[in-house]
Amino acid sequence: MTLKDFKDKFSDWNTYYNDNEVEKMPWYEKNLDNDLENEIISRNLSKGRFLDLGTGPGTQANQLAKRGFDVTGTDLSENAIEKAKTLSNKVNFLTDDFLNSKLPDNEFDYIFDRGCFHVFDVSQRPKYVKQIKRILKNNGKLFLKCMSIEEKNLPDNEVPHKFSKQQIIDIFSNDFEIQSIKDSVFKGTLDQFPKALFIVMKKS
Ligand SMILES: C[S@@+](CC[C@H](N)C(=O)[O-])C[C@H]1O[C@@H](n2cnc3c(N)ncnc32)[C@H](O)[C@@H]1O
Image (cartoon, rainbow, N blue to C red):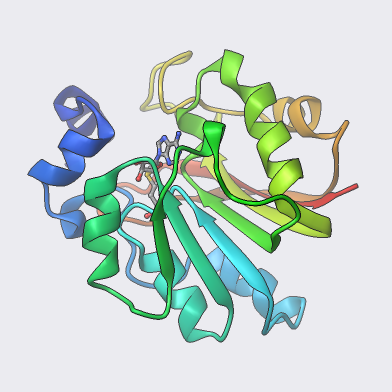
């Protein structure tokens, strides 16, 4: 399947998770995201509270729990969460709309967002930044993977939104210390992996 086929089929998240096998979704990746894995190894991280935001199939949350983190996985879609629960009983899977999140303040050492931020409307970005800041502990880190402006198979100004490095700096740098931004890809089930940015930032 190409990115365009997927966009044509897509209606809304909960219906999509009800009607489709997670293993065939474009973002499905059984293993831990390579970029996050590298950060965990290079920073020698092995414990702490991790939120997998927009967990979808729950594979990333499952992999983090296997590495010893105390993991919560949240998603807007109840159907996604029901399916994710079958994957691991070590992860606390919850239905939660991140923009109106009921997660407590200063709760997580780390947040991983692989493909959720880029689905939000431009007008929702300040709310997203506010929620990340509220939920992360002081000095907590956000690991963010989003679509890159370099991905030419997607139209501009549509979901998923595409970002340049400068846009990321403009959106986050008032509230976060941006530690790295690198070019990457979204490994998944598509024939060609879409181009992505992988960003590490610290709550400042
Ligand atoms: C591209 S998928 C990525 C799924 C997962 N992170 C992964 O990498 O396999 C984006 C996910 O964000 C979820 N999502 C969309 N809007 C959301 C919201 N307001 N709050 C929480 N999750 C949301 C969708 O249901 C979907 O599972």
